[in-house]
Length: 102
Image 1: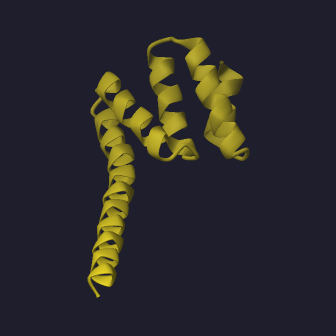
Image 2: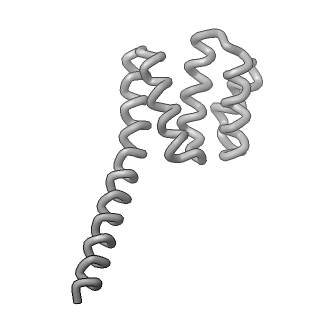
Image 3: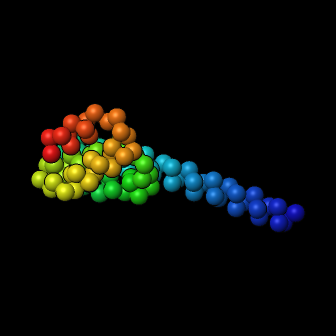
């Protein structure tokens, strides 16, 4: 009986940690987007990079990183991020357009 109680506690604890991790994924991208719109590019860059750590298949974070690189005139980083966007989302018109301009 004690063992079952212990296993149930561990299960609920794991589910709690998973829900916290899922919430943080969304918060990183959303916070980065808010900072980007406020033209705080260096701070927003950190949040987009954190979002990629938790969700490496999010093309939107790569796209915003490419936009930040364009503002900083870092062509290599911009191209790398745009290529990542196109790998994850080949039909992304904005990334295709930015890459053509580059």
